[in-house]
Length: 243
Image (cartoon, rainbow, N blue to C red; front, side):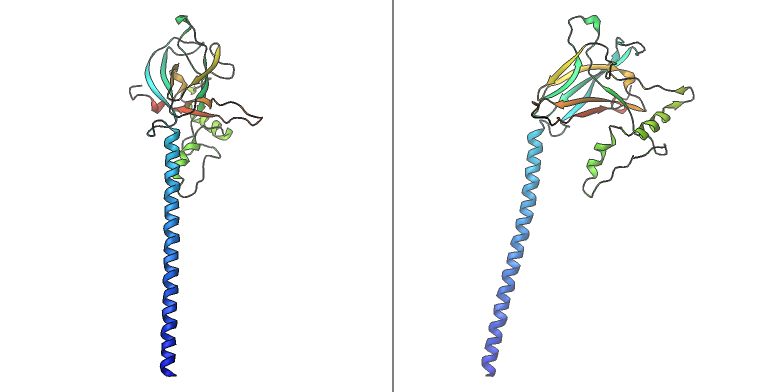
C-alpha cells in the first residue's frame, strides 16, 4: 500500500503541475491579447487622427501671420496699422466662416473676417472665479484647450480690471461682430487644404485680450439638432517679436 500511495501522490502532483501550467499559459495569453488590443486601439486612434488632418504636425485649423503693416481704417477710431493673417483649413472637411463680401473696388479696404475680441485669462492674483480646470491622469496635454475662450463673467471682469493703467482704463475694441462689422458680410467656405487671407486692426490683440475667429464645419444640416461650432484664437504673442 505504501508504494501505491506514493505512485498516486506523484500522479496527483503531476496533474496539479499540468493544471497550473495551463492556467499560467492562459493568463499569459490573456495579457498578450490585452496588450495587443491596446496597441491596436492606439494604432486605430493614430490612424484616425492622420486621416482627419492633412499635416499631422499642425492643428486641424490654425492662423498664421502673413505680414504686419499700414492698413486703411474701416471704422472710426481704428488705427492705421493692421495685421494680415491666413486662416488655414488643415483637415479633410470644409469649413465655413463669415467674411467681408468680395468687392472689385480697392477703395473699400482689405478683406476681413468676423472676429471676436476676448479678454485673456487673468494673471495670478486677479480676483476671478472658475479659472481652474480639473483633469485626470493622462489628460495633461488637453488642459490647455479649455483655458480659452474666456467666457466666465467673473474672469471677464477680472481681465478688464487688469487692463487699467496709470492713464486710466484701456478700452477693449469691438471685434467685427454683433453689429460692428465694417461692411457687407457673406458666408465663406474654405475647402480642405484651403486658406483665406484677411486683415484686422492691430489693436484687436494686446497684452490683455486676443482675437477669436468663429467657424463651423460646412456640413449639411440634418434634423433639428444644431451643428457645433468652434473658434481659432490668435494672441499678441503670436505676432513677430518686432511687433
